[in-house]
Image 1 (cartoon, rainbow, N blue to C red):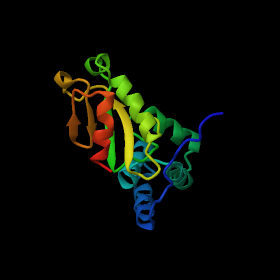
Image 2: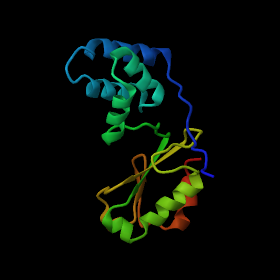
Image 3: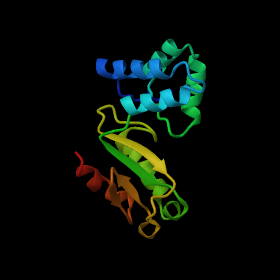
Image 4: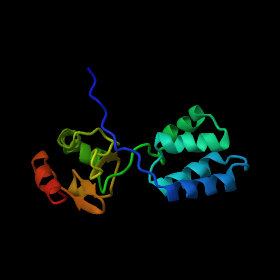
Length: 164
């Protein structure tokens, strides 16, 4: 049986919705309006959950299938919120060869989430990236703007404890 996916409940505010409606009203009649509307919506909410996509669809008449297709095609869009602490593990060649894949897998297990997801309490989100420009410190991960290098799986608990 597949594990139930952990999600953070949508918690948009009335102010965010009003801001989104203003953006949609300003842009909806322009040719190619979907991309700028989605970009502004992500700026407002931090991500593009189903509820935000539905508001955009309802207000613009653009089918949900098209909106979902665009949000999942372009890597600039995210359907999941980011945590207070955004963990990014480098899976570029230098880091991967030195064990970043094992670190990434261990983080998924310890946090109970998959890559691209956020813990239900909103504390941590986990993503993979291709290079952080610190190949000499491989393997590397970042938590927000803090770089951790020359990592082993045994380092993870101590690092996460700093953010608890």
